[in-house]
Length: 292
Image 1 (cartoon, one colour):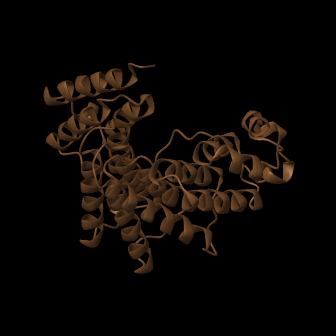
Image 2 (image 1 turned 120 degrees about the vertical axis):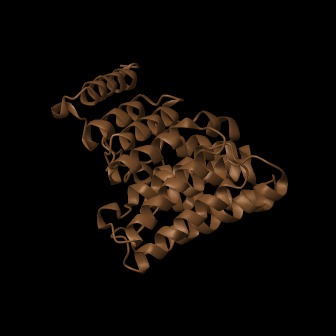
């Protein structure tokens, strides 16, 4: 329902109106407000972030305090907005969570969702320097975990979101070069970790980064080759990996990597024709509607 957010907000407005007229039993609580904000998140409305901020103001105006989930949904909303400055706005909310937690409010302890949603907000924003900002948020998360301030260490989604911020970087060659340096170091750290390994989304995103950020030449070919061989070793080659590898590599390299006799054969090869060993570990996560 594309009107779900507006309907939920209208219901909140009715409850506030009745409450202000003296019916104290219908005062909306934090769950009511957060559910209304989440309704905007579910439908992915472009103006959802601003509508969510408006609901936050209404919430505070009647003395209802937002909770961790309220802020996590707002961070996600700013990511979905894809607006200029969305990453900065999402990060300001994350900083507020960190500050409240440090000041003794244990209920505001940020989670892996808080940080990863903030990184994704940077990735989806059109702002310059977003790769560096996304990487910095990942660094903050690692530091907070090392200090024992948050329970969760970064997961594969956190790292992949940083690589996505790099892959969607626009700008001059210097900015692209900086973005690729971050993408490569993030991918390398993840690949060498004892606790994490790249999944099919990570590999696909890294191939996009190579394609978008590296100039054509031997270094690019070598990078594609090395990453694709790791992808096959890990059994993580899905249709997106195959597509983006083909985009990043020369036709001759694609044929070589796929074991084809000529580039035209390689160009038409689909993921269903690949050996099972190359695709064996692909797991498609179920869609989640709840942000915690």
